[in-house]
Length: 395
Image (cartoon, rainbow, N blue to C red; front, side):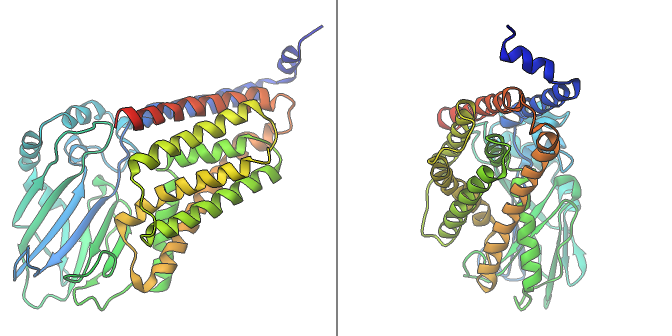
């Protein structure tokens, strides 16, 4: 008598095997990226006539990945390992701070020319460029250097406009009144090559409600697709449990409710947990979901509760992004909700892709669980287990 496995093999047509192979290769292809560095946006803070820059001076502090700029890895790559210059980048990561600073100073003049600084619509070229490079530290993490551009501030200048080179990727531009807390002035996320609007130096210009909503939806979506690989794998794990929509609905609802709660609490400052704790636990949550997929084919009563708890962790991870950019008090609630909407749209995009790739075509096949759910869950569990080990022992 033929085994069930052999019967499944006979029933599984060539297209089915091709789809499974494609899915597994796609997941496995993500493994190198787990140890790579995302090409993150640079974060620039503009200051004019403050105590540090001095009267008649402006200063722009830019937190950036100096190694990526020096090796020519830019917006065309989602992470550093995708680039032909990955080997050069990795070598630069090992340089001592003074050596890397010397390398950057060699291109400082070109860097100053590339960055667009406009005061009252007139482009100004920075007079001074300096960089502060931290120690090497953990090479599994991006080393954030701070480049400072400064120059004479035209008397009576009323507006500022920011232009970050497309080759360097995305950027966030922020400008706060002297003595104000982060987020009380102006902040905007700009995609590669995008230029900011004319920003009033008197801080009379504010984003309209519509602009705030659009901006933070874009930031939230981008945090999932394409940059949130750990969140993508978690959502894919939820999808793989069952081809029926009710189990997925229960899980996604629990996850959404949970991460909305901690996102709000963390952004408001009521909850603060170190990323050194949160990030390994997020990886562990992915392992759990994937392993449970292997041993059960239905929604156990406790799974939505566990997914809810995991959602609390993921919400803390989402809050880190908003903490970097800041939320204007004038549109705090709108920005927070819009970011969360962007996250949800990103998650729905992941689920839709899963349906398009395998769910619609093979979800009702008898061999779906054996040849798609289980192998894909094993691959996800292995990747996430490595992340967990990496974030605990290699951090």
